[in-house]
Each structure stands twice: as C-alpha cells, then as structure tokens.
Amino acid sequence: MRFYLATKGECDFVINTIERKSMIRIAIAGFQHETNTFAPGETTLDQFTRQGSWPALTRGKEIFQVFEGLNIPISGFIDSSKAQLHPIVWAMAEPGGYVSDDAFDEISNEIVDGIKRIQPDAAYLDLHGAMVTHQFDDGEAEILRRIKDAMGEDFPVAISLDLHANISSQLFELANVITIYRTYPHVDFFETGARAAQLLEFEMKWGLAKSFRQVDFLIPITAQSTEYEPAKSIYHEILQVKCTSVDLAMGFPPADIPSCGASIVAYDPVLEEADAKADYILQLITGAEAKFDPKLVSAKSAILQASSLAGPVIIADPQDNPGAGGTGDTTGILRALIEAEVTDAVMAVLHDPASAKAAKEAGIDADLALFLGGRERFYSEPMSANVRVIALSDGKFTCTGPVAGGSKADLGTMARLQIKNTGIQVVVGSHRCQNWDQEFFRVVGIEPADHHIICVKSAVHFIADYKSISDKIFFAISPGANLCDLSQIPFSRLRPNLRF
Image (tube, rainbow, N blue to C red; front, side, top):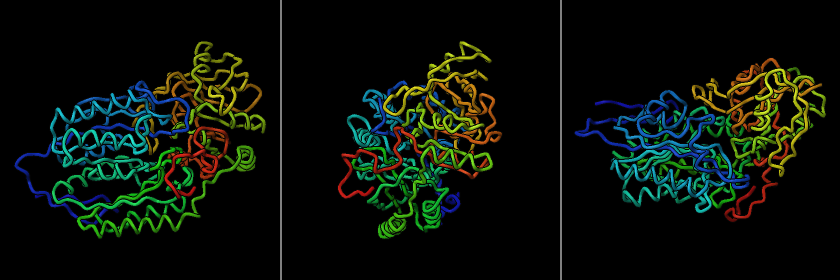
C-alpha cells in the first residue's frame, strides 16, 4: 500500500492506494485561451501554433520533455499522477478576440480523435475556462461535450481552470472534477494540475458529489488580485476549508456571455458537505462585494504621484494588457509620460513589429523618426517620435520570475528605443505579450530596478516578479481593449440581475 497526502492547506484526507492489477490509462491534453469578446480581430490557428511567452503547440511524447519542470498545470498533473499517461496535444494563444471556428475545430478534433484512438480510462485537460468562439459561448464545455459524445457520458474527465474562468453550468456538469488556480498573479499553475490528478484518482475510486454556485456580481480584473484584500483573505479561507476540494473562479469580465462572472465548485463524498462548503465560500465573497476596489487612477495622476515618490515606482497599463486581450500597442501612457517631462522612465512591451523591424534595419546608435504603436486606432493614434536605437534583440529569452520561471519566450525582433530629448525609453516587440517578468526588460539590456518609473503593459501578473523591486504600484487608466471600469463595458448578453 502507498499513501498520498493532499498538498499543504488542501484537504485533510489521505488516499490509500491499493495496487491495481493493471495501471489506469489517462489521456492528457491542453487547449487554452482567454477570450475578450470586445477585443478587435479573432484568434487564429497560427496564434496557437507559434511560441510567445509559453511553449508553442506541442504534440505527443514531446509534451513530457517540453513541459518538464515548468509552472504549467499539465506539468503538475504529469508529475503527480500515478497513472499511465498518453499525451495528445497542448496549445495556447495569447488572450484576444473570438477564437476562429477553424482553430477551435482543428485543435478540439485533434484532442477528441486522440482520446478515441487511445481508448483510455479517463482524460485530463489543461484548459482556461473563458474560451469563446463565434459558435460557442463556452468553448471548453463544447470540447467536453464532444469527448463525452465520443466516449460515453460515464467517461471520466478532469480539468484544471484559470482563476479567471467563466464557468457555465454546462461545463460544471460535463466535467467530473475541476481544480482552479488559487493565486493571482498565478504562481500555482503546477499545484493546480497536481490537485487535478489527486481529485481524479479519488473520483475514479470512490466517487464524489459536487456542488456549483454562481456569484451574482462581476469583479473587476484589478480587484481580483490575491495580493490584496478582500481576495487575499477569501483564498486564505479556501485553503482552510475541510473538505475534499473547493475552488473559486473570479471570472473574466470582458466577455459578453451569460456565464460571465465568478463561481464556486466543491467536491466531497457527501453532497451535503459539498453544498455547505460552496455556500460558505459564496457567503464570504458576497459579503465582500463592496470591498473589491479596482484601484484605478488616471494616467496623469499616476505619473504625477510616481514622480513625487522615491523610485523605483511601477505604473501598470491594465487596460492595454495583452494578457486580457489588449492590443499591446496603445500610446496613451507613453504620451502622458512625455507630456509630464518625466526624466527617467522605461516601458515594456509596446507591440510594434514595424518599429522593431525599422530599428533592426537601421542598427544600434541609429537615429530614426518613427510612428510608435497605435495600430488599432480605436484606442490610440500612432505617436510620432524621434528615437535612438540603444539595443536590439531577437526576443528569445528564458523567464525567471515566479509566474513563468523556466519558460522560454519568443517575442520576435525587439528594440530598446530612447525617445530623443527625454529620459524615456520604450521597448518595442514583434509578438504581443503581457509583461509579467523582468526579463522582458533585461532582454534588451535594461535593469528595471535602476530606473525611477517602470511602466508595464500588464494588469496584475507583473506583481509576482516586480514586487521584489517596489511595492509602490499604480494602476493607470488609459484607453484599451481590457476595460477595468466595468461600468464602461457595453454588455448586452449577461444573465439577468448580474450586478457590475
């Protein structure tokens, strides 16, 4: 006999594993996208196949090599599971507009066909929980529906989801077990996958009752961070709950679908226990409704306050966060820095392939007249600037921070540009990606801590790595696709009586 103890702060139970005559076989796969239905354009198959800040599309046994040791849910599942694992495919695209139908069908069908071919005893999927296509409000539920149609309703499927998942009742019913990240910034990807392996094993041996609750108000992205109250205390309480499993998804607000918003999933051998724990967490989050402060200030105010403080000071541009569907190319805060005559500021990463290419062609120390950013004119205009090329990079580096440490990134051609007659430097890149790691600056020779004002195109994830530099953080409001003031989002399809 072997004993497996749940992870620290998880459930106070021990699984007594009896040696099997034949090992359980589990198919594993991943398909992640966080869909901002208000973002321009759509997310195509090409965006799932190429590498950004996460691994490129990976198939078959290469998954074991590529994901070994990474802070990614499927890595945690692989490390924790005692079953015979059969990897199929893993794909992820940077958050953005609707997932194209062909991209969804191509990857979903590969997963379903792989499961049909393998004929395993169960499946695990590393999903996000906020994927929307032109056909399906809940992409993840459709994937599970196709799996169940192929393998039968009794086929066990475990999934892990992002803290920002918009969980529908259909997804909850189709999944046998669900685990969800418990940190934002997400530093527990690995642990969440590991918990999914444990929970699936328990479900397959003894069975679990499950409970689902939806919260009746939306929570702004910048108010969801577990670095701050009230989320910090709520998730602390989740870790203390004595039951098999209970998790809270905070939801992803810029998604105009009926299932948008926070929800709770709970599992226990006894239904009454699962219901009680789900109700307890629902009571906690409902009681804290008025305390969810998005902490937003105007760009002008953020820069004024930052300039008056001893550096370094961090200014986030959450509404242009590529990690929530932002275009990554808005120029609002950059303009505000110049207008304020800031003497020492660095910004990364402005998504501007054209400027990066021009800088590379001109070479280091070249002086250029460029139009920076502003490709999506709905949010900002290109900014005319005279710049000097300080450094160039191929955009390939390894992340070192708590969120993605060990992951290899590829942002394409990157350039460090000094805006002439100012103390402002901007890093431009060719692939859209949120800045959640100091290596996004270091790849072009900037040490963030050496500068007074550090501007990052990110909403919250940056805190995990950058808090080692400074706890002076401002969330500056400038136009972008990831609206953080929920009153400004033109919703039309939310479920009735959902407050925001």
